[in-house]
Length: 336
Image 1 (tube, rainbow, N blue to C red):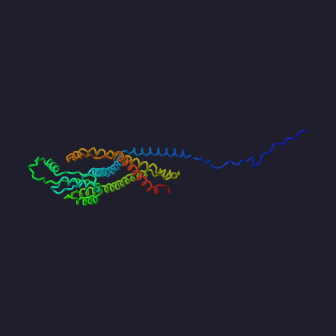
Image 2 (image 1 turned 90 degrees about the vertical axis):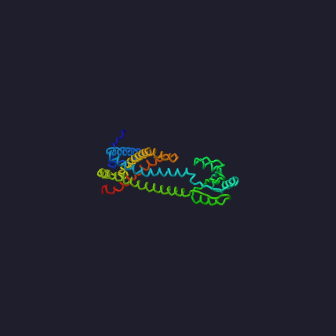
């Protein structure tokens, strides 16, 4: 019996018409790709900013020179104050006190007094100068040769040279009052006025360095900010177009930040160069002046850490000046 074949089914309308997917496909971007794109854009913007500066060499050099001068003046004062601080550390003799014994005091009494002084709290070192040793030193200073027979009595008393541990003026004065009442001590002399003057000079110098640093740092911000402001105004239409295309404020600000950083880096290099040249120019006369007083002194340099600090501050101030300029003009240059 032949089986009757059925014709194939016609597809229904619902099965025949397949709804097509609508809308654009979304694709996730990995963090690695974002990082590479971010780094590539920074490299590109940095290079373009440097090339824009190179297109105007004279104007760029003058801007960097102004930044360098703003850094050189406080840096020179800072180096001078570093010399004063180093001088204060080497001037241990400036805080010494001299205990003059009574005339005719026996050497044994002087030694006992020196032992008592060594046992006193706050004393770092004690040196004994007998009356005979004092007379010999006095003769050497004056270029005299007096025999013991030419002098009936030695007019110079024995002395104790005391080096105190504390550097504070009040503590040194308290120690001097304590040593004044020791047996055989006639007089205590010390030059506290020199310590007070040196401390006052240090305090004044440190405040002056801070004030000049803040003042000239503000000047660097103004110099870079004004230069970047002119660059922003010259690219105003370009900024409006890329803002309409969806550029963020950070994207717009980035080239100008690199411009400020390049200006700061150039100013820092010029400042270090000026410091080096000025130090070499002044070293010879200052060394000759120090040798005339029987001293050895050379002008200190900024060193590696000081140079790195100056260079870093210059770049940071350049960035800050550019950021202030772009942020200030952002509200006016973006399209409404």
